[in-house]
Length: 141
Length: 386
Image (cartoon, rainbow over all chains, first blue to last red; front, top):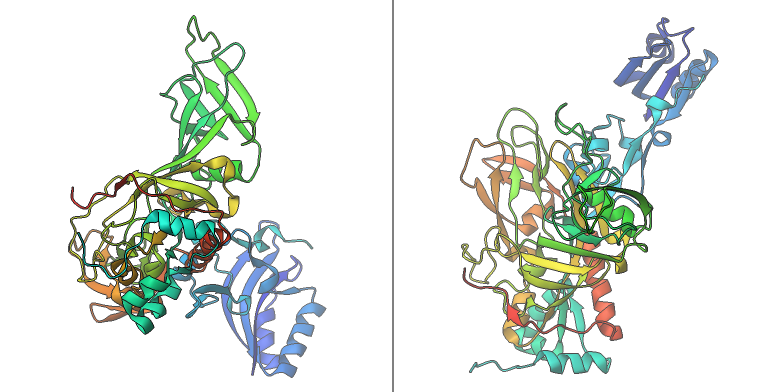
């Protein structure tokens, strides 16, 4: 079983098409949508975890890209500024997926972007604002 | 006078530091030394134990003299990058408080406010060498005719900048939880409803005042690590309260002693003074403090050998539903990641950086070993009774 947290950017031409349904029907994949938005100029953005066997997953991604959907991994959009982060741990109070967690006994604050769902709760919970989520400003078609 | 087997003085230890012969360990390292060898042997081996803490400390700020202008001004209202500084002092002296938000901050008008910039951030920017815009207004006098000044300043340009924090390094602090049904935003961070998380804020076994719990070596004139430079304890901090219930090992079971600290901002480093924003609460400053504890006798060895499982704090509800503490927990429970409150397993969250506290204790250790940091003998100890 293969699973990955991804960001999909839909161009306005396809935003009204049942694309995710096809991922399930034709490619045997399951999904869990964490965030979905349609912007004023009709481009769409969706954050989801996509799950299935690796072959189906790759074919599914290929299908998306064929339609002009831009596929990114979350890691490209959510970052921690390692200079600004002072390893306190306040973010672990709000992180729903455990992407931000504390390694014990060292008490290091770990950011595992593979687990991040881009909910953005950490952005304002971080006292030094070390977490940045950039995809809302990053729509470029 | 006393019955200690080991008796050392500050000047004897300083002599050893000067000769490069002092034995210095961190409060973490001291735990095993005392456990394995006993307090007397530990006291004969070790001269100084270093501690550290790095966390938000709201009662902080800086005295700044921004230099006389031509014609001179007796400033009555002053802003640094838009953050008001208190100017009710002589002509160009101001005090910039860490929790003062920028003048046009929307505060909590849309709750929870984000408090992106305030006094703590200005202090960080100054220490980072950034240019800061200073504006000053005055009513004008015969001797100070100037009524308005606006200039860009850097820390280098300022004649004086002194970090002076009236209450830092709290000796122990509450662990905060939320019994209510909605998320609350506090100076102890975001607290999710129905005991969603438990936030705590000391470095436990590395914490300065938990290693000299009865104030037997620290006081006015104790030299410390402050914001990356050498600073001093100049008084007991505001709200210093020695009269709280204590464990047999001397450690208070809740918030007790505090320190007023002071140092030259010009010598400090941006890595160790960080402007912070607590969502829904306000802005503040994270301050790095490290205090050396002289091992004058076996009692001090015993105190500094304290470990997280021997220190406790109270779990308190910050939603206002329950006034009394909900339970007592040890720091090793807090550090394990989970505590039990009212039968529920609650996820613990530190606001104080343990990793950085270790780094501070190690830096202070190396300074003392190199002989660049001597112990300051207090002129008067912190009050044990108030």
